Image (cartoon, rainbow, N blue to C red; front, top):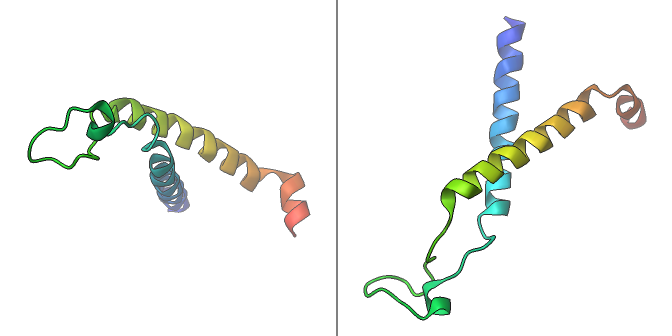
Length: 85
């Protein structure tokens, strides 16, 4: 049963890291309609022209995997465990 607990904990931590990374990545490269000068009738002028969501989801997944690897290294590192205790 402990294996399932570890898998669930890993997935939960990755999920939180992934959402934090998504909020960090979302603003990059976004241009509003008012910046391009082509505002579509009935839409907010600040709405993005091309949000590049698939690229951002991919970048979020890769960035979250890197942060998760660093977190796992930190949790299992004897040097850091000794330092924090």
